[in-house]
Length: 108
Image 1 (spheres, one colour):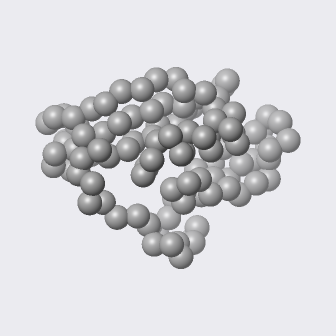
Image 2: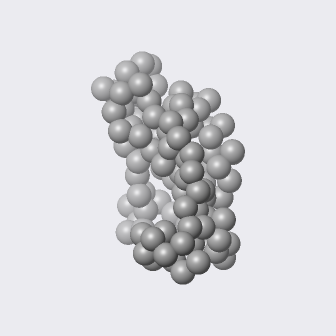
Image 3: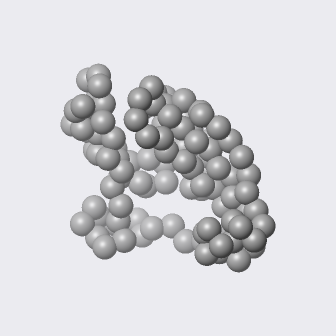
């Protein structure tokens, strides 16, 4: 996640998720969890009214990570698709969030 605030605008405004919690993690435990030496992570948890939530991980340190290639397609080995279920009229959409993650919104 490059910028938590930009992604929040998308997930809250477009998908109606709410912030469920925020924290920052660093130190040896975070380094072991992420496998990144010197990791300092801003975590923002989002929830819908039902079902599991989403966590944003914005690495404050280190800052030299790489983005996915711009021409990434859903069938590429490194690609991931986030599946979400909609209870309203939002089903049947394929969306891209500000960081390029692919979201498939299906009917519940």
